[in-house]
Amino acid sequence: MNKQYQLEQLRRLLENPTQQSGIYLINTDLTDYEIETFIKTEKICHYIKETLIPSTKDNALELLIVGLCSQCSEGNIQNMQNLFLDADGPKRDTITYRLMIDVIKHLCVAEKTVLHIHKDSIYSTLNQDDRCKLKGAIMHHDNVILVISKYYDINSIDETIIKYKSLKGPKYMENKLEKVHISYKWNEEYRDVLNAIESGLKENNIPYSMDKYDIMYRGSIDDYEKEIGASSRVIMFVIPEYFNSLDCMFEMTRMFKNGNIKERIFPLVDMKGIPRNGDGLKMIKDYCQKEKIKKLEQMATEPGGSSFLLMEIQKIDEVIKTLDELWLFICRHSTGDFRELVKNNAALLIQELRSTLNQATASIDENFTPSSDFKPIPMREILQKGEKPIYIENNIGSIIIN
Image (cartoon, rainbow, N blue to C red; front, side, top):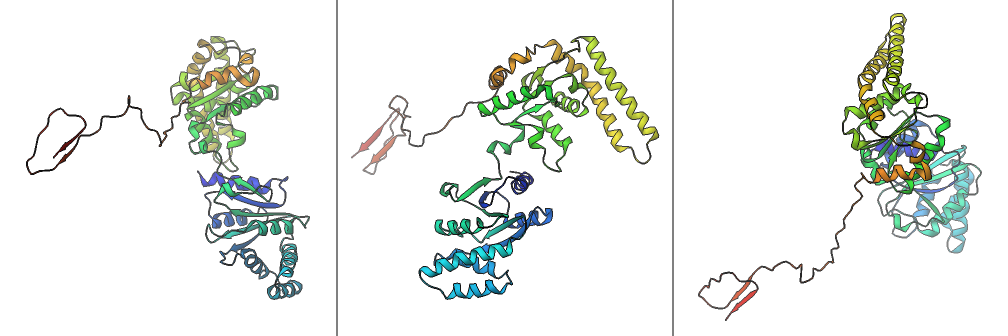
């Protein structure tokens, strides 16, 4: 899994305005150092760290508190720490809890604070009672306090105390091109269509990608457009505004450049007033040519460099060259009634899409014992007691020679 993707998921977790105080155990390939560097560099929130040290006496929380106390200069906390170190029996639990509340209040002064607990090893962990104490202590404060730590064993999570977050995303994310990509131009009038497509893909557990989810902060729009073009399956939702969008049309050029259009591209088409004939094609080409001329005129009068305009002109040239292929595809191949295709969460579209996906999987039962009908012929086994060798032809089974 790309670590840049996981860093962006971490950002979303920490910047979420609805995120509540709590203990968050995160599943990630990021190291503690990478997490620390990212939060500090991006200045997402106030950052505190402490190391959770393995303890043979099951007092990892007490060691954690001692470490946090070392970051506090307030005299009252130092006095409380001395009482904590000298206390014994039931009184020690009370002082531990009180000290933890005071330490967190002293350190977590910002509106949102991340208390990042580093781990020396996978054996560094807090037991359930200690987790309850830690959660209770942070809940005593109005500011948002997120205790985050890497976690290794998902099966042992008690979600009543802690919250599990995976930064890795689903396993299919590891191969982006196997996801169904959606190429579209946003128009509020077609919101219901896009919602239906998304719902249908989710219901059928089909991994998909849309720009609003998968172009990360500071991610490359051009790279994502090329990713759409190379995807093994693309839903291309064509409306009049699609033709006027250089980004959408550039995605289209990438799709056709990578070939196998009939197998890879699933068109949804609502042309409205654009005729599906040569006249419609001329309308689109004329629009592209006017845009190209406008960009060339801008280059002639623009001060400074014109590399960005030159890039746009090159894209327009590619679009014009590919338009005939696009027009042949959407005009001379049946695209059906797009409103019928998206009814009932795009049931007909998903049915057609699924028919081309490799849904078959096979599992191997290691305890499988073949029946006599299918059991393989065993190797010959010869047990010989004597000095003279014997050669036996065309035999199946065991031979014992006394």
